[in-house]
Length: 490
View 1 (cartoon, helix red, strand yellow):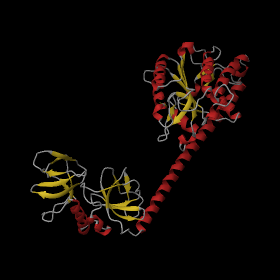
View 2 (cartoon, helix red, strand yellow; view 1 turned 90 degrees about the horizontal axis):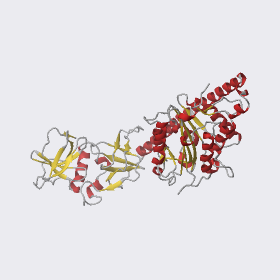
View 3 (tube, one colour; view 1 turned 120 degrees about the vertical axis):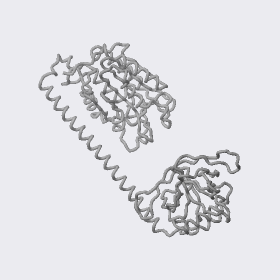
View 4 (tube, one colour; view 1 turned 180 degrees about the horizontal axis):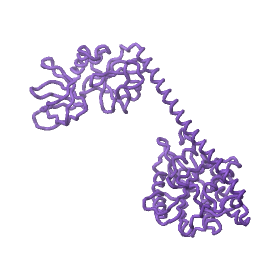
């Protein structure tokens, strides 16, 4: 038989927020704290000492909750119970759970208590509690914050703590959480009711698994949002309440027949929950596979249209940079990118192919950019050059590819921009990379370092100066590279 958690060696922390600066108020939460504290300290239910059941009402800062939870976890030698009632929020970017404080704003998740921090406080390395129960009665401020996941699945799956029994409400809106005219919220009201009334044909004491099933049945009978439970390491066998019904009936519900019926019901519910979890996982995997297939088909369609499109000969080439990392696709029609364009690097847009852009990179490779939104258009690499320069306006797709003709087109464009020497220079511009970081010295002979060249980046060699190279960095700074040993030329 399951043993009741020793109330003399256990601790409870009850947290509730019923008034907010931004969010809607939840008056029933204040009653939740009073009712649950009375139930947990009632000698015929659990019998916690008054000073072992701490109430934190209207916390405005996360540390007001976390410090107390950590302290009580180190005091408890048997069981630690942590309860929260109020608004539950989720990060729209990560779907991570946050618990609202008095000043929390749903558009600024960092103003709330991140559940991960509460989880860490519960599993604090200094905690002595052997068992932990976490109960969350959270109300969501709108399903839009949940993304593609349901409220119940989201909060329960995300919040589970190793070695803990977690019981959560699944309410999504305020009316569902706090029915008008009722003292408590829907979930906590049924929880308090089961603790006070006991469970017919239930065990004594009442374990968390049995408590969850009866709260679930009572909410289902009233067509209200259903709770979720997650247990790790026999967490469902934690008992925090005596069965008042059994004690009132002189223990008749402890008969062998009642125990068998309870065992059968437990096994059926466990099988249903396992099947639900399996179906949920399969559904999520299928959804991801379908999304990936549709994304691939969309890329393939856009590539096909771009390759078939006639180049726009009326649009001159231009320099541009991307705001974020973006894939570059080959002209062979494969839906897998062969390279990526990186922010902070200038690329040459050669010609429009429908909605796509034919791009030439610094290493001479070229491909199709499908996502052309929010490009930074500019003159590169010398400030003050004409925009767009004549040489770039006269350069066309056929003149910028690989080979001597393409190199000539790019060089003529760079000549006009002022990054290549005049007609008398004895060498042509070329791209190069350095094997190790090397300084770029000022041309004025002052001995000043104007930039440092880094490995893995292509730089433009404008002309040779004896054993040195006049080079230009990506940000338009020019100078002399004196150490040219081991450089990699394109």
